[in-house]
Length: 249
Image 1: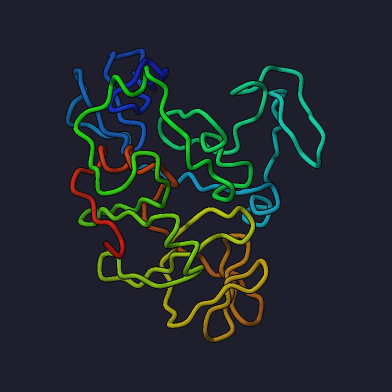
Image 2: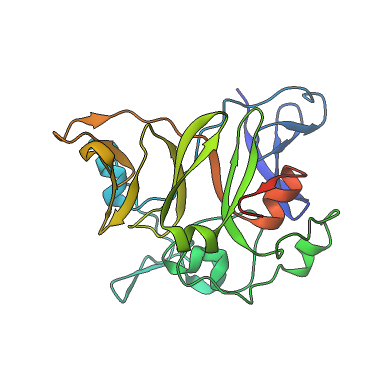
């Protein structure tokens, strides 16, 4: 059993340390960075997907919902009593690093309304290594990685296309803008056409993706597999996976 704390920054990303061995760990890949556990991994790492409560309950109807007392806003009202992140506003999502402005909180509705002028705090910038300048530092998108693929899908491309296919590890993958959370996501599917319609992604054969769950024409739920992915800022993904591919670039 290991217990972990946030202990500092490296490449403007948070670094974890376990109390037992004092090893430093990468919070994205789960790999040991420095210390006696180097060569070990906390894998397999699970996907942390952006979702709302409705989507979570579609995935598991028996899910227990815990509501923090940290301040947050919903329906034009403020709830919670404890001080929130960044002046009392709850943090809807947590891309690597920290930024000034709404972009650090996912713009309030996931990927919609991101602040183009967001910037890293000086204390984060001081820890940056050699950056990849092919994309702006604070650009946001979907980062996907497998044993052989490291690929970044810029948010502007996903927004423009809505839903499209790509090949990841010789498998057909659907990359789409989730209609509920307005965040990008990817899932392996055996389909040839896809289009957004309301809150659904319609696929050929009458199948549809709703609330992150795939359903057959007759309503039967289909188990899906997703590539490892994270909704992230460019600098964090590029520094974690040097030389990563950029979709359509």
